[in-house]
Amino acid sequence: MPELPEVETIRRQLAPMLEGRRITNVVVTDPRWVAPASPRGFSNRLTGSRIESAGRRGKYFDFLLDDGASLVMHLRMTGNLLYLSEASATPSAHLRGALLLDSGAALAFTDPRRFGTAEVIASPEAVDAYFAARLGPEPFDDDFTGERLHRDTRNRKTPIKALLLDQRRVAGIGNIYADEALHRAGIAPHRRAARLTRAQCDALRDAIRDSLTAGIDAKGASIDDFRDAYGVQGSFQDQFLVHRREGLPCPGCGGPVVKTRVAGRGTYFCKTCQRG
Image (tube, rainbow, N blue to C red; front, side, top):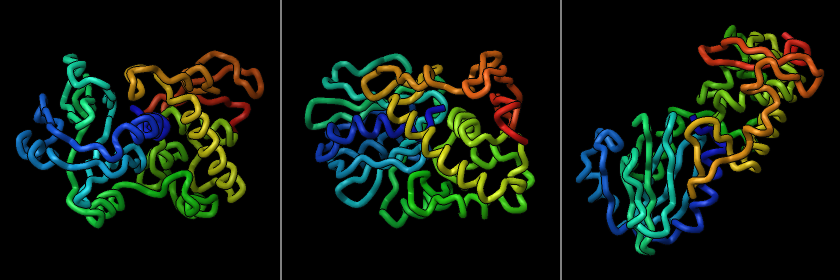
């Protein structure tokens, strides 16, 4: 599933191409993409709108429209959002819908497994409420501190990796960046969250930011389906410290990276470098 760095990579690429552009038509090829709205209702609602800004919240795209509404999209497991300089180049394979722009370009949403979503939320207040119900702080926001992370872990019997995957605790982290951040912080993924010290939470906050920054700089990780807005793979998979490196040497101590399951997810870590 694309995580914060992958979504942010696409957002940065799209912003200069979309901001100020008007949507001239919307094609919905899979009604499931916009449900519970109807394809016609979704198209009519967006056609003629101008995109004021291309934002992101956690793993969601948040495109602000000129009437104050937002187009909110989520790639889920296998979605991609592709920018096509000519609308005629819109792909047919796995296409779920497309926005046609007054520049002659198109924004195509493709998704082999059809879990991705798109919806229009009516106002800034409604958007704030929508995200407040689903997401915790952004990892790069000032209010995401080691102190806050330490407070959130108190009395939590869940493994620390499970807590990081909970979008209500911190937005945007998935399986890849949880593994990478925990290795940087020297914390075992199965360690009970409540047993983390304040110093460990400070280190983990920094490690989360470092891992996400490295992912953004590498334009995301392409393990399976992820491509950027131009259909190009990211390269962060070439920089993984532990994720998907079972049996390979840990970059810290040289011992083998092992694989286990935490919170139902395949999890990679070093038994020597990651205490717990």
